[in-house]
Image (tube, rainbow, N blue to C red):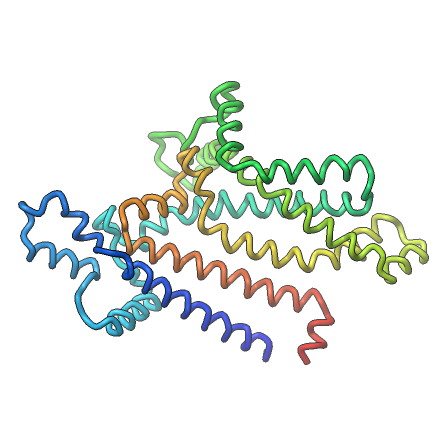
Length: 328
């Protein structure tokens, strides 16, 4: 419990620091979005109406510390403001409509790439120097080094435009009313997500593969591995119960970091396949200088990153008894 509360206190301070930066950075930029919104109509909009719009959207004049404490209060009460680009839609509703798509697409891609890359890395380390290791390890690194936009364009032109096996974009068929109680709608969503999911997964496998391979190689010469072989245990048991189980610990941290960043969405993939995730929302907010949405999404990304790192800290302590003994 002492470890739990120490880590929880650390992440609370980190959240407060991130929220402070989130408050300062937009206000350090010149101008404000309300003035820009009416920049081309200054002769038709009175200053009183502009000031009223600023007040409505939270851009009021006053001491900075008052704005800061008001901002913190709104954060913890869930009042994240109103979008400027999509007024009168609230930031909560805007992010809530996109978060599910990003979690589905990017979260699934992270989990798949972690599982596939880890298993491939385990066998690459166990048979290091073989034809499999010589081919698979450099190949995945080459694929990972290719920009996401290139992979997405190649996949789209091959499977969507050339072969016409899959749709070009969108999360589901245009004109369809989402019905989450219908199995046909789920199949339609999976059909449209196939290509974006493929692109997001392939581009991440190499990192997990190399990480697991290196961790395994460092462990294969340890005494407990030699003892397991000397006891006559099967190769499968030595690989997975002894070597892979211990090599998995550093990869848990990498997985938590990847899941934490999944909330930001796959910006390039979402743009090319017109997928309605948070990456698209963030891009639109940047173009429109929609401070409220930018602050809300950056805060949401911070919360997810801190949460998954906290879960990784707890999971590693549970998996590694040496850390529990050291903590005592």
